[in-house]
Length: 157
Image (cartoon, rainbow, N blue to C red):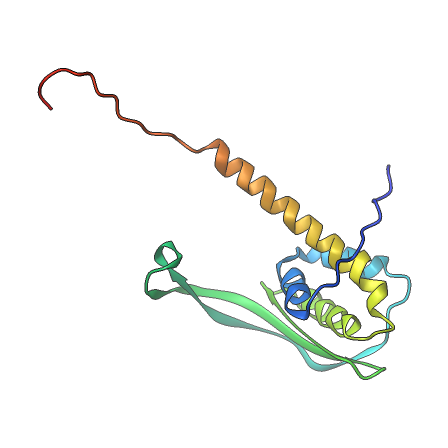
């Protein structure tokens, strides 16, 4: 089995890494966390809670907003022993994923810990997310149907 290539970080902004953590699969987040050499100690400020959130949509992305429905969401907040506070919101009911994501958020805010998680965790999860999006786009493109109208030149309709 080949080793994963080294992933270079690109200096993520907080909204970017929170988005990556929220959209990553629970198994990927847990695997990345377990692969870290050193994991800091932290305390739960808000133990993971499961709830519902209202999802809104727009027709074509431009129309009036409407209530699409509700989805399950889990949130957590932790504080590292070094003082940084991390928050996370993830889709679904995986409490451990929310707790780990919050701990990674806190680590990303620490100048001394960021280098240990930005490339090995955030960049790797981001790459997996981009690969899933590319695959979904290819599958959707494969089902695209081109419609055309042929004019015969005959009279009538």
